[in-house]
Image 1: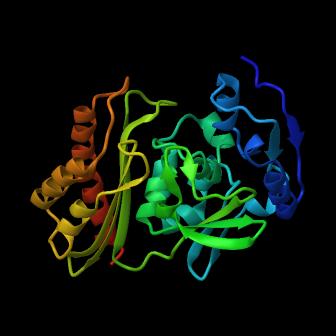
Image 2 (image 1 turned 90 degrees about the vertical axis):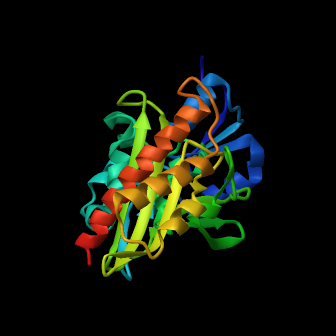
Length: 291
């Protein structure tokens, strides 16, 4: 199938891109890496009269560190994020997550901003960003605003973005001593397969005791899903196989999976249980190593 007929726009500034998005509204789409949008246009899932390319916005293609926080431009290719020394040293779980995604060619084109904005439940970078308590910066006709990453996706393919708004960067706060994170993903095959389920874990430890924990589930709910009860169970507990198993069982209950070609709802719950245990073990090991 063809991509259909549309007018192609190439703004050179963020304000120009926002103005075009506001002018054409629902009849337009912003183009970042294109790994999601072009597939949707070709399949007929999405039809627009205007495609607004963001490729000319070079200010959105950088990774910087400010006040200890990672600032990741929305247009930085996923492969560049995964290979960034700043990311690998400050929040390696994000690199781990990206390295499991798709194939090299897709990662060379895809962007973290696009991964957020497509709003699909099986996206891999939003859950680990949520676990890190990340924020996203949005720029639009009304100015700039910051939103917690976990509040960005409202429902499948629905986000908080207003007409004309663009996600410009993802901010991952500085990770204090004693913290560790992990991303675990399961798919039916390597390469471009979508996740059957994923689990993102963040913990903070003091004196070998878990003091804080966050768990987010991917591909088993309409949004990056917080496993609140499982995370609460871990607080003030010593990390061991028993507590990890209990948390995994709770996370499986908190998941909201569907049944489809990739697996039944019960199969996905079983996968969540196992991934949660493994992610907790790795996160706690990393936390102890950073104390």
